[in-house]
Length: 339
Image (cartoon, rainbow, N blue to C red):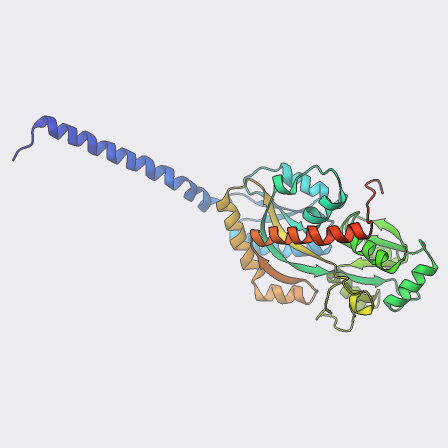
């Protein structure tokens, strides 16, 4: 049966509308997929809130190299030390939400700073989003070999007999090195003089030269100097001994149970970054953390790799805010931003 010409025209018009709508829908749906597939199209900046040569910087450079290989673009480390990571966090908090500015840090900026400083130029909740957890590192109590102490007990006795005369260095006011030492002094009833630096690596030459006498330093930069006889290791801050140096006792087992001070590292992005980009970053970061050779390399330097997604980082922040908040309150630990 032949269809009337008017009916044929209506069918043709409807078919064209269907095809047009399908084309529009296809274009709309393909846009985010295309954007995700092509990102990144230029180098990615990785902020490090400490000076070059320290534990965070060394870790960041290894992570940046391997993530760059996975992303197909360079990941460039940008050291922005100072103000206990606040300078770098402010930069991240004002960066664009395009995924091209990241940071490797976490513990100082998301836990200690909010506990110690009443006003910050960034908001951990409003400005920062975690991408994934990388791992943990304790600190090692090291002293200048000329200091007449060979154990934690002797250090405590010497510090008590010479209040304020021992200088201890830190990677910055309010950082994990500083607060770990303050906690130790609170537990032991000792008093030493704080000399802050813009990174732990900057304090090491002064410790070896005798301008500092004590440093609670990350093992990754302390172990080679201890093995070379340039520093003396007294203890580690972790709850268990280091596999890299099993002869060094923990502070807890030397009479101060409960003392467990460690920092942790994560990859952070600007809040508001597109979720497909954050997911891509997390996938590439997990590949890096799960790399056996890299895990072994840093385990020998007392950095324990442990992958965790963004939810794991958020849970860790909540846990540490409660734990370290109690330590800071009980020890009456305060920071002087003018120091």
